[in-house]
Image (cartoon, rainbow, N blue to C red; front, side, top):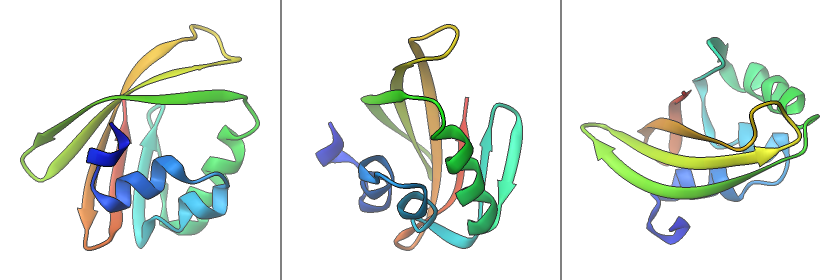
Amino acid sequence: MTDELPAPIARYFSATTPTQIADCFTDEGVVTDERRSYRGRRDILRWREEVGQISFRQDVLALDRRGDQAVVTCRISGEFPGSPVELDHAFQLEGDKIARLVIA
């Protein structure tokens, strides 16, 4: 499934460090996760450092294009209450970078 993803999204899912993930975004990129928004690469880096404290695995299940968005459904499993869960990752791209990501 990951070979069908647009390049910036494939880079996001294959990144292994918070820095690599933050580098997938535009300078003004925004991530919304658990109803909190993180703006700019510095905030996105901090978000991923916090998320990285929990051991988890993401498996891409589906890709759906909705207008100017690419929505990737993932199964997230790990050491957190309610595991596993399926979450949609709605990406808006700007060139070869991610401008916005909403996880819900």
